[in-house]
Structure formats: structure tokens, C-alpha cells
Image 1 (cartoon, rainbow, N blue to C red):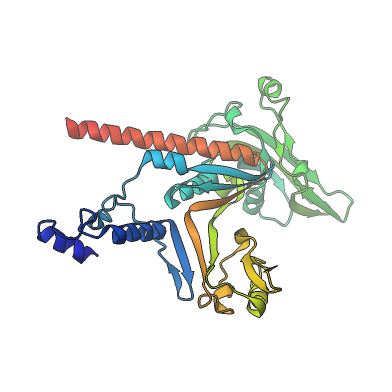
Image 2 (image 1 turned 90 degrees about the vertical axis):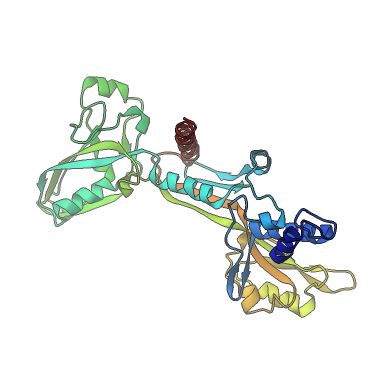
Length: 369
């Protein structure tokens, strides 16, 4: 096709009626449909994925007289977010009409750039248990703390912990006459740093997300006494500040059966049995026969059993994924509700876009000058 376009240009643009590249109109329309399909969807075969990449350069298809430039109007029209499930622990939603880099940026923001509160320093006064001091401090740091991070200031490097930038927990557990004493997160006690902090946080005191997190076990006569200083941080500095258990996405599966070559009878039953996720079903058709249908494509994990253990490709089954349709799952640790994480990640992404716009504007001003 590129050779056809080149010959057309070399001959002064003469050629059969069609586009500017000299390709006939019917062929140009077919090429356009195929390229748009390759840009939007990837196909899974026995050899691997096909058309996994996406051409972002606006002139990628200039030789074919196809415009690949980004269109803000088309983006606004095609972009959507549909919430499928929402609770304090989990949010599941579909994000459509967005490119993979932006979807991945949203995921990384959730993991690494939404601030939370966690134990940043532990001062140990007594530890006669079997867990070493540094290991005990590490375990305490990983206890998720439920507290609104916006109520604290960021602590600067080498700045002391104070009532404006931190909250403090005390931990003092002694195993007396018992044979064993378990130390749980519920043993952490909030210690206001001053009276103003007590009054300010009295209605929403900091506390562990779960009171039954096991920290250590003590034997008779053993003791742990320490002070735990909590501060605001983000997950890219340490995992203890990450607000999510998981923040994942997968591409929407696309499974099609050729209507001109339906999978019938025993083949339909075999296809249904082959898929371990129950993606396919069998429906009755006129005349008493049976036909395979796609019942729920979202269940597909792209294990490719339908084209490996079953001759799906030969029978017209096409297995693929949509490159602009993402199924997101956000599971909160518990210190911030999952719906709030969703909103804060979007706000952070918006701020990053504003910074990028500012950088581009300054660069443009310098070039213009």
C-alpha cells in the first residue's frame, strides 16, 4: 500500500479515483477500518498476541492518507467511567476510551502517590521478647492506621515530630504469670501531644484499621515498651504508606464467533466444557439443534484453552482484547475508603496534567522569544 502511495506521488498524483494517496475509495475504506481495528483491539493466537502496540505518532499512517492525530472532541465523546461495585473496601469500575499510558498512570498514582498516615519512627524503651528491635519496628510500621492525612502537615527532613505533623501511639505490654501473651494492634494507645491536639482529634482519634493484627508474642516475664510516631507519607517512599492492597486493571476481553460458521452440536458442548471460566454456553436452535454462544466475556482470563484444546480458530472463534477498555479494581487497606481513593487519585492525575501544561507553556514561550 505504501508502494502504491509512493508511485502515485511520483507520477504527480494521477491514479484511480480515491484518496490523496491514489488508493481506490473502496480499498481506502477497507484499509481505514482494518487499521482502526488494529489500533483498538489486540488478537490472541496460539503464537501469542498480535497488534499489541498502538501507534501514537500523528503521521504514522500519512502514506495511506489516514489522520492519526489526537482529537479532544472524540476523546470526550468516547471516554466514560462505569461503576460496577462500590464499598468502603472495594471499588470496581470500567474505564473506556483511554490509552494504556494514562490508565497505568492512574494505577501507579493509587499505589505510590496518594498520602496516608503510618508509623515512621519507633522509640524502644524495653524489648525482652524474641523479636529483634529492628524487626519489631518494621512490623509496627506496617500496621495500617485509620486517620485523615489532610489533618497533618508534611514533616520536613530532619524536622522534629510535633503536634502539627504527627500523632503518637504508646505500646506497653508485659507478660506476667501467663505462659504466653500475644501483642495485638489494639494494644496501641493514642497519646495526644498536647491539649489542643486532644481537642482537635477527639471526634476522629487515630487508631489501627484492624484491632486483631498480631505484632508479637511474649513469654512469662517478657516486656515490650515503646513510642510510635506516625507521619504523613506516600507509597513511593515506603510500602507502609501505600493505601491499597491491590490496584489492578485488565483489558476487556473480546470473543466473537463467526455467524457464518456457527459451532453446533457436539462441538458446542465440547467448547463449553473446554473453557474453565464458563465463558461459553449452549443454546437451543430451531430444529432441535444446539449452538455455542458467548455468555459472559468478562470472565475470560485469556488462558486460550478455547483455541488450544479446542480448534476454535479453525471454527471461526476470534479471541482478543480491547486496548482502550480497562476493568479496574481498587482494594483499600482500610485507612482510607476505596471511593475516596478513587477521587484522590483522579485529583492527583489532574494536578499532574496541570503541571505538564505549565511546562509546555513555558517551553513554548521560550521558543517564541
